[in-house]
Length: 200
Image 1 (cartoon, rainbow, N blue to C red):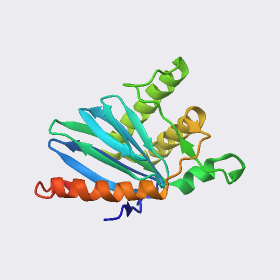
Image 2 (cartoon, helix red, strand yellow):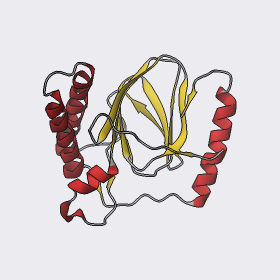
Image 3 (spheres, rainbow, N blue to C red):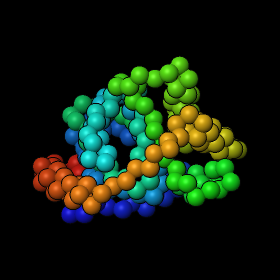
């Protein structure tokens, strides 16, 4: 079974897709990749992720970013896990880049539960969480001209990403890593086949 290339569909006329995830039992998103970046903000519980063959457990308060075309998967356990997921169009990010140069765009967001952050990063992380929190009511209860507030919040998030979390290191996936994810997908599909909790 090969990793799936996901095409991210944006919401309304916005360059993003945003949703709230609530899992009360074991649930998995099998290995896949897409052109756009994906940000997960864990609100409660814990979430296991695999990114470039590296497995990590996220806890409440952690934010992780999946960069373009990085194979990744997630697995939640049997405890209540909630999270915000924001996917941002790569074309939109390129349009925000200075001089529209040809450099690839990658972000690196430190995990609050595992990494030491500077006061500046801590402040930026707090602002990022606040803006992600603010997206939820704007999507759930749209009002007249709320689209303007949505755009404002998206640009605030994008500014924070470029200003504080832009990485100069390109992430590359080798052919051996692709083979690893093929095996991983087969194993996890077999383990969860009867549970009905496999999603892609």
